[in-house]
Image 1 (tube, one colour):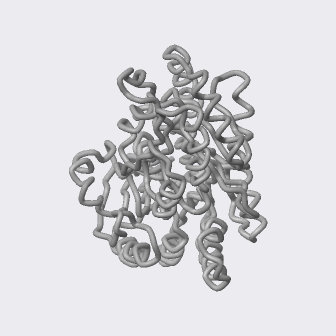
Image 2 (cartoon, one colour):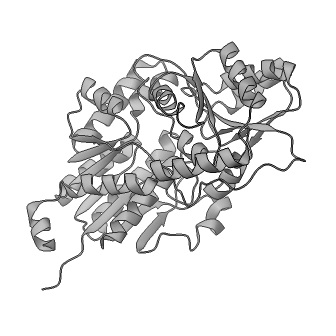
Image 3 (cartoon, helix red, strand yellow):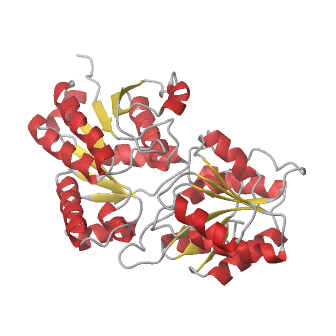
Length: 402
């Protein structure tokens, strides 16, 4: 009797080619299950208008991607409670009406996880939760409303407690889950980089002014404003450099006001771009920038953008606390990964000056890229996630596949 393939459904408001760390991770997971012979279906959103041409024909081989219209904010992102609900409510019915899967994987926000828990209970199927972050902790930096935070914490607990397993980005996140009463079995798998998209792509043209790059979200909890202040002080001694922001975030207006208040020049904002294009930008940067504002209860977070930077041959300047500091300190003795400093303007400005004074040459960047691509391949992480997920399959499914 022929073996019946495993059927896996991934539910996420974001998926490739929409540029985001979650997109790259979920695409790698989908590819890994397809490589193992599973039937993989992704339930996600229709790409933003500007990215629909790129989305056409770009789905991973062996993966069926089902896209549904969704509300997006003014910047074109699914961000905000109304936008989340425009995905979560239809998702619930899509899950119930679609062919039943053996296993479901769900990506935050917690409201999506809550919809998945109810649907999975009706379908009597297990689901695995991507615990890339704890939204109820992160939200404390965006609102002081105890009611909002209490409700969000309740929804997040509900979503994660119903999962048969979770995969987390770090042991610190698993520990934090336990502190807030989530006992779901969780495996810290780390994060990785898409080595097909991110690699050293050659040096910056001599005709282009030297620059630093901040790539990714710049929300309240990131504290990216420290780089505006640090760059202003750096520019007093070393004019002619640029600071480029690629991405989006709720702090855009605040950052622009800070730039105007300080009279800083050379700071530019760009919309998110695909991995290959961003890798070209990183390959030519003096250094990439990442930050995490220190705060109670959220210092376990890891800034995953460092992987993309290192794989592109670009060292990192990190400002803040947490496991990113440990990561940089652990590797800097053997590889030119960059430097980490506390969330301090003067110290950050000094690290920018250090990076500008002694930039990596092409050979060093190529070596850094090769090492990072080998050490932090996203495909390795995806394989761990697949192992974690397959471990929760019911005995009847494992018997069917034997």
